[in-house]
Image (cartoon, rainbow, N blue to C red; front, side, top):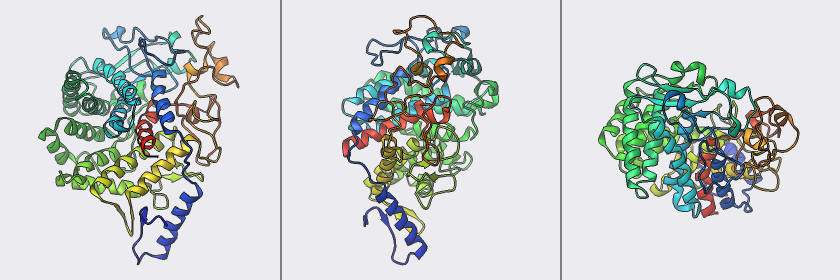
Length: 498
């Protein structure tokens, strides 16, 4: 019964045999579909990012219902902050999740770019749309512009980005108002992207890496959480609950990978305990990088190149064990339909980011011919791939509601997503300005959104697999860039191997 998936020693307790049996039965009862078009889903997952673009749109823009927007961003501070991505269904540019999105898009290209086929060009373009903005946001030494737009005035309106007339206030961190979290993540994004462009555009790659070095030095030298400096602007939206220490290790890990400079290796070894690499290891997302740090660094251990990082490999193994069905940590649940579920909003961000780590680690383990020991059981790379694929298949329609949670994929998908641009008439259809409160009737309308935000993956169902396809239920119906970014890598792999 799939002996290469979950290995059990002969003297295992009856309890563990039962546990493992139930786990395998669960996977058999929720069969992995052979019918999904992963390449189509990949194409759409990348297209979504074009719908989130801010600034002047390029001639090759494929989502035609979008138009130029926010063309004067940064002008109140005397800088050019046009471009970048809106994070979700609103019109704010939040630097913290945007940087994380860019890091994960870059990691997707680094690990899975060879299986993206014709979509590789579009994915690299999505990375560059993010890094072009991050370069603008870090152009002034010892300053990072971390947000454009007042979230309270924006969230008080239901407006198309093309019509925006709310405050485009600019928020920054500097020596006196530190933000090691957002600066560390920005350094990680720039460093990861420098790897993507190393052979494609060497001059741009060097620019990214040099900027990453400078931004990381600023983050490390002036330590503090950006939500302490900018609480009224960033909380409760993207408040740093987890602390800034993980972003410093994360930034150093990517700089080590991108530059191979010994200084970053020594920084990681020296600061592993101080910066709490082993904390909350079953979390990975825009606020918490712990699991990602351990998986990323473990690749070198598994390749036999870095025994001095062995403790990160142990942390990575513990992370894997903490999310296995039946063995999982109390903070990681599975819905009756088999979906990873963690308390809080926008659950699909956990599904895609944790699944990305499962898949990446399974590949690292495969190359080293290793398995993950979990007490008296062990999980093979094949099992980790199967678990990640099960999550992706759930998103694409293998779930109790038999609906896809990706807009435009499959026969049935969310129609009323919490997204201003998608839910309001396009500028082409309705050229006249739609004001702040005039959009409310579209927000409250029971009608489907008029503009298809193709590829958008929404926050998803609740812990019992129920989903209200309704704009006011934003935790379930709002898409985000950081849900899609790790999904790009997952779909690239499965499109080539299944």
